[in-house]
Length: 246
Image (cartoon, rainbow, N blue to C red; front, side):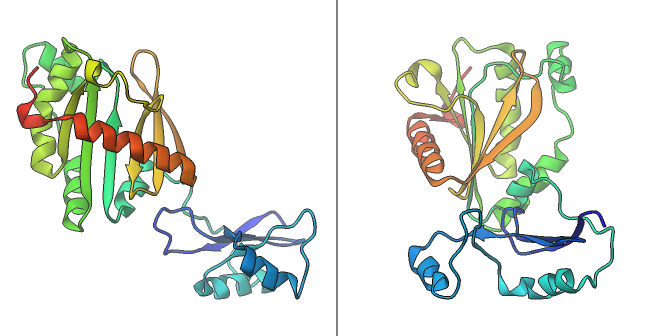
Protein backbone atom coordinates (compact mmCIF):
# COMPACT_ATOMS: atom_id res chain seq x y z
CA UNK A 1 0.00 0.00 0.00
CA UNK A 2 1.59 3.29 -1.06
CA UNK A 3 1.25 6.38 1.09
CA UNK A 4 -2.30 7.69 0.68
CA UNK A 5 -3.56 11.14 1.59
CA UNK A 6 -6.47 10.92 4.05
CA UNK A 7 -7.41 14.53 4.80
CA UNK A 8 -6.46 17.99 5.99
CA UNK A 9 -7.91 20.86 7.97
CA UNK A 10 -9.97 23.38 6.01
CA UNK A 11 -9.62 26.18 8.56
CA UNK A 12 -5.93 27.08 8.33
CA UNK A 13 -5.51 30.74 7.35
CA UNK A 14 -2.38 30.15 5.29
CA UNK A 15 -3.14 26.79 3.63
CA UNK A 16 -0.29 25.16 5.58
CA UNK A 17 -2.62 23.00 7.57
CA UNK A 18 -2.67 19.86 9.69
CA UNK A 19 -2.88 16.76 7.52
CA UNK A 20 -2.99 12.97 7.80
CA UNK A 21 -1.67 10.18 5.53
CA UNK A 22 -1.76 6.37 5.71
CA UNK A 23 0.24 3.42 4.38
CA UNK A 24 0.44 -0.26 5.27
CA UNK A 25 2.71 0.43 8.24
CA UNK A 26 0.52 2.98 9.97
CA UNK A 27 -0.45 6.62 9.58
CA UNK A 28 1.39 9.95 9.43
CA UNK A 29 0.25 13.22 10.96
CA UNK A 30 1.43 16.76 10.42
CA UNK A 31 0.45 19.34 13.00
CA UNK A 32 1.75 22.26 14.99
CA UNK A 33 4.94 21.40 16.88
CA UNK A 34 4.34 21.71 20.63
CA UNK A 35 6.99 23.88 22.31
CA UNK A 36 5.18 25.10 25.44
CA UNK A 37 7.28 23.69 28.33
CA UNK A 38 4.26 23.49 30.63
CA UNK A 39 2.32 21.40 28.13
CA UNK A 40 5.33 19.20 27.36
CA UNK A 41 5.95 18.62 31.06
CA UNK A 42 2.34 17.60 31.57
CA UNK A 43 2.45 15.16 28.66
CA UNK A 44 5.74 13.70 29.87
CA UNK A 45 4.06 12.65 33.11
CA UNK A 46 2.17 10.08 31.08
CA UNK A 47 4.69 9.30 28.38
CA UNK A 48 8.28 10.49 27.98
CA UNK A 49 9.14 11.15 24.29
CA UNK A 50 12.03 9.32 22.69
CA UNK A 51 15.06 11.10 21.26
CA UNK A 52 13.65 10.76 17.73
CA UNK A 53 10.07 11.76 18.59
CA UNK A 54 8.19 15.07 18.33
CA UNK A 55 4.87 16.10 19.86
CA UNK A 56 2.41 17.77 17.52
CA UNK A 57 -1.00 19.34 18.11
CA UNK A 58 -4.06 18.84 15.92
CA UNK A 59 -7.36 20.76 16.16
CA UNK A 60 -10.25 18.67 17.47
CA UNK A 61 -12.13 18.83 14.16
CA UNK A 62 -9.37 16.58 12.75
CA UNK A 63 -10.58 13.69 14.94
CA UNK A 64 -12.72 12.14 12.20
CA UNK A 65 -9.82 12.28 9.73
CA UNK A 66 -7.49 10.62 12.23
CA UNK A 67 -10.15 7.95 12.79
CA UNK A 68 -10.35 7.31 9.05
CA UNK A 69 -6.58 6.90 8.89
CA UNK A 70 -6.49 4.63 11.93
CA UNK A 71 -9.18 2.31 10.60
CA UNK A 72 -8.28 2.57 6.93
CA UNK A 73 -11.86 3.56 6.14
CA UNK A 74 -11.26 6.19 3.46
CA UNK A 75 -11.36 6.39 -0.31
CA UNK A 76 -7.93 5.99 -1.95
CA UNK A 77 -6.79 8.59 -4.43
CA UNK A 78 -7.62 11.66 -2.38
CA UNK A 79 -5.42 14.72 -2.83
CA UNK A 80 -4.69 17.71 -0.64
CA UNK A 81 -4.48 21.43 -1.24
CA UNK A 82 -1.01 21.15 -2.75
CA UNK A 83 1.89 23.59 -2.34
CA UNK A 84 0.89 26.94 -0.92
CA UNK A 85 1.18 29.93 -3.27
CA UNK A 86 1.22 33.69 -2.90
CA UNK A 87 -2.31 33.76 -4.30
CA UNK A 88 -3.43 31.47 -1.47
CA UNK A 89 -1.81 33.82 1.03
CA UNK A 90 -3.43 36.94 -0.40
CA UNK A 91 -6.85 35.35 -0.67
CA UNK A 92 -6.59 34.31 3.00
CA UNK A 93 -5.19 37.62 4.31
CA UNK A 94 -7.16 38.96 7.28
CA UNK A 95 -5.77 42.41 8.04
CA UNK A 96 -2.81 43.51 5.91
CA UNK A 97 -0.68 42.81 2.86
CA UNK A 98 2.50 44.81 2.19
CA UNK A 99 4.42 44.49 -1.08
CA UNK A 100 8.01 45.73 -1.27
CA UNK A 101 9.49 46.09 -4.77
CA UNK A 102 13.14 47.05 -5.22
CA UNK A 103 14.06 46.48 -8.88
CA UNK A 104 14.27 49.11 -11.63
CA UNK A 105 13.39 46.63 -14.38
CA UNK A 106 11.22 43.55 -14.45
CA UNK A 107 10.20 41.47 -17.47
CA UNK A 108 10.62 43.81 -20.45
CA UNK A 109 8.88 41.31 -22.76
CA UNK A 110 5.55 42.05 -21.07
CA UNK A 111 3.00 42.85 -23.82
CA UNK A 112 1.75 45.94 -21.98
CA UNK A 113 5.25 47.36 -21.68
CA UNK A 114 6.02 46.62 -25.32
CA UNK A 115 2.75 48.29 -26.34
CA UNK A 116 3.67 51.39 -24.34
CA UNK A 117 7.17 51.52 -25.87
CA UNK A 118 5.51 51.40 -29.30
CA UNK A 119 3.36 54.41 -28.49
CA UNK A 120 0.25 52.61 -27.24
CA UNK A 121 -1.60 53.07 -23.95
CA UNK A 122 0.35 50.35 -22.18
CA UNK A 123 -2.88 49.15 -20.56
CA UNK A 124 -3.77 45.47 -20.36
CA UNK A 125 -6.36 43.25 -18.69
CA UNK A 126 -5.83 43.38 -14.92
CA UNK A 127 -9.30 42.20 -13.93
CA UNK A 128 -7.92 39.24 -11.97
CA UNK A 129 -5.75 41.48 -9.81
CA UNK A 130 -8.55 44.01 -9.46
CA UNK A 131 -10.91 41.36 -8.09
CA UNK A 132 -8.31 40.06 -5.64
CA UNK A 133 -7.58 43.55 -4.29
CA UNK A 134 -11.21 44.64 -4.10
CA UNK A 135 -12.16 41.42 -2.32
CA UNK A 136 -9.33 41.84 0.17
CA UNK A 137 -10.07 45.48 0.87
CA UNK A 138 -13.76 44.64 1.17
CA UNK A 139 -13.06 42.26 4.04
CA UNK A 140 -10.88 44.83 5.83
CA UNK A 141 -7.38 44.10 4.49
CA UNK A 142 -5.06 47.08 4.16
CA UNK A 143 -3.13 46.68 0.89
CA UNK A 144 0.12 48.66 0.74
CA UNK A 145 2.86 48.74 -1.89
CA UNK A 146 6.20 50.55 -1.91
CA UNK A 147 8.57 50.73 -4.87
CA UNK A 148 12.18 51.68 -4.28
CA UNK A 149 13.53 53.13 -7.54
CA UNK A 150 16.66 54.69 -8.96
CA UNK A 151 16.48 58.18 -10.48
CA UNK A 152 16.25 59.09 -13.27
CA UNK A 153 13.81 56.20 -13.49
CA UNK A 154 13.92 53.52 -16.15
CA UNK A 155 11.35 53.26 -18.92
CA UNK A 156 9.91 50.26 -17.13
CA UNK A 157 9.28 52.30 -13.99
CA UNK A 158 7.69 55.06 -16.09
CA UNK A 159 5.26 52.47 -17.43
CA UNK A 160 4.58 51.09 -13.92
CA UNK A 161 3.99 54.63 -12.67
CA UNK A 162 1.37 55.08 -15.38
CA UNK A 163 -0.41 51.87 -14.37
CA UNK A 164 -0.37 52.71 -10.67
CA UNK A 165 -3.48 54.84 -11.02
CA UNK A 166 -5.30 51.55 -11.53
CA UNK A 167 -3.75 50.07 -8.38
CA UNK A 168 -5.08 53.06 -6.44
CA UNK A 169 -8.54 52.64 -7.98
CA UNK A 170 -8.58 48.96 -7.04
CA UNK A 171 -7.90 49.84 -3.40
CA UNK A 172 -4.12 49.73 -2.92
CA UNK A 173 -2.15 52.45 -1.14
CA UNK A 174 1.05 52.96 -3.16
CA UNK A 175 4.17 54.93 -2.33
CA UNK A 176 7.55 55.44 -4.00
CA UNK A 177 10.98 55.83 -2.44
CA UNK A 178 13.98 57.13 -4.42
CA UNK A 179 16.92 54.80 -3.83
CA UNK A 180 19.17 57.63 -2.65
CA UNK A 181 16.75 58.16 0.25
CA UNK A 182 16.88 54.49 1.22
CA UNK A 183 20.67 54.16 1.31
CA UNK A 184 20.88 53.81 5.11
CA UNK A 185 18.04 51.32 5.51
CA UNK A 186 18.79 47.63 6.05
CA UNK A 187 16.62 45.95 3.45
CA UNK A 188 16.07 42.30 2.44
CA UNK A 189 17.86 40.99 -0.62
CA UNK A 190 14.73 40.36 -2.68
CA UNK A 191 11.22 41.64 -3.27
CA UNK A 192 8.66 40.34 -0.82
CA UNK A 193 5.11 40.26 0.51
CA UNK A 194 4.41 40.62 4.23
CA UNK A 195 0.97 39.23 5.01
CA UNK A 196 -0.90 39.89 8.28
CA UNK A 197 2.46 40.71 9.89
CA UNK A 198 2.77 36.94 10.25
CA UNK A 199 4.04 35.44 7.00
CA UNK A 200 6.72 36.66 4.59
CA UNK A 201 6.87 35.52 0.98
CA UNK A 202 10.18 36.25 -0.75
CA UNK A 203 10.13 36.12 -4.56
CA UNK A 204 13.03 36.06 -6.97
CA UNK A 205 13.86 37.29 -10.46
CA UNK A 206 16.61 36.56 -12.95
CA UNK A 207 19.22 39.23 -13.64
CA UNK A 208 17.00 40.51 -16.45
CA UNK A 209 14.02 40.84 -14.13
CA UNK A 210 12.05 37.80 -15.24
CA UNK A 211 10.11 36.11 -12.43
CA UNK A 212 11.64 32.72 -11.63
CA UNK A 213 8.37 31.61 -9.96
CA UNK A 214 10.48 30.60 -6.97
CA UNK A 215 8.80 31.46 -3.67
CA UNK A 216 10.15 31.17 -0.16
CA UNK A 217 7.66 31.42 2.70
CA UNK A 218 8.55 31.91 6.34
CA UNK A 219 6.64 32.58 9.52
CA UNK A 220 9.76 32.42 11.71
CA UNK A 221 9.17 35.18 14.28
CA UNK A 222 12.64 36.74 14.17
CA UNK A 223 12.62 36.95 10.37
CA UNK A 224 9.08 38.32 10.27
CA UNK A 225 10.04 40.92 12.88
CA UNK A 226 13.02 42.13 10.85
CA UNK A 227 10.90 42.40 7.71
CA UNK A 228 8.15 44.26 9.57
CA UNK A 229 10.67 46.79 10.87
CA UNK A 230 12.21 47.32 7.42
CA UNK A 231 8.83 47.72 5.73
CA UNK A 232 7.60 50.31 8.24
CA UNK A 233 10.81 52.35 7.94
CA UNK A 234 10.44 52.32 4.15
CA UNK A 235 6.77 53.29 4.38
CA UNK A 236 7.55 56.26 6.64
CA UNK A 237 10.01 57.71 4.12
CA UNK A 238 8.21 56.83 0.91
CA UNK A 239 6.29 59.41 -1.13
CA UNK A 240 2.56 58.90 -1.82
CA UNK A 241 1.87 58.11 -5.47
CA UNK A 242 -0.07 61.33 -6.06
CA UNK A 243 3.01 63.35 -5.03
CA UNK A 244 5.69 61.34 -6.83
CA UNK A 245 6.66 62.57 -10.28
CA UNK A 246 8.82 60.68 -12.76
